[in-house]
Length: 287
Image (cartoon, rainbow, N blue to C red; front, side, top):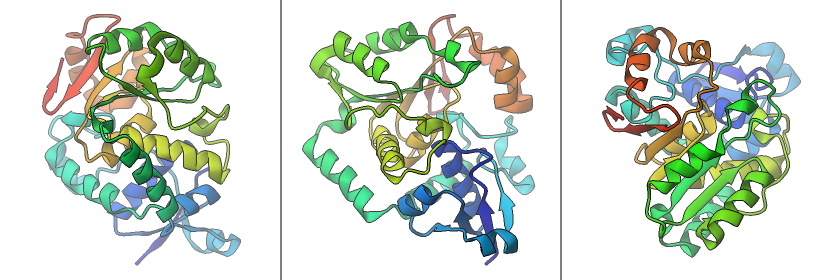
């Protein structure tokens, strides 16, 4: 079995790193990592030594890989990232198996299972992931809280909320507005976990638990272009209905890059979404 090293410093976000590991495992490769926390979260992914870095090829990337011979299965898509329920069945089968079988640290898995046992109605909660982009000069204008509140307003007020966010200000706003409806795993740490600027095990563990639990919700309201939301959906077995609030501030050229040459089709589909509303992803449907 060929060995490769995921060079996490190039695409450092937690979701990006996980997608890179999954892509490499999908190729039948033995994967090493340069991120110490990831070797804790996923024990079968060993931390690369200095000798390993000299010996083995380094790879980086954030997309779930589509091999040339698999293009037949992509139909009108040139990539499968952020398609959620529109992901072709072939890739649902391929990658959901890898996400399902990736070995998660026993302590982390036990923590999640205890939390779920304490909240037997957890799957019925609305999972919300809000990335503030607070340390990203260009993207922080993409956060429009009104769109998240509008998406949430389409559900009964009796529905409780599981909130994942990198911002204590966002958590406070939700608690002030929705009160006891809001459940979080714990206090939001003021960290840069989603930009990957840490190998701290405790912080990465907290972030991964948020991601994993988010995926157990039947409905996810997620952040546009966030691989954190995307990986949560994959870890949940691709079952959740996903709503993505989409700000008018997101540049067209970024959308084109995100969906590659199939942007023309996406533009036509997205034109059906009312401006200032949200994209709603279902199995074979976008409205």
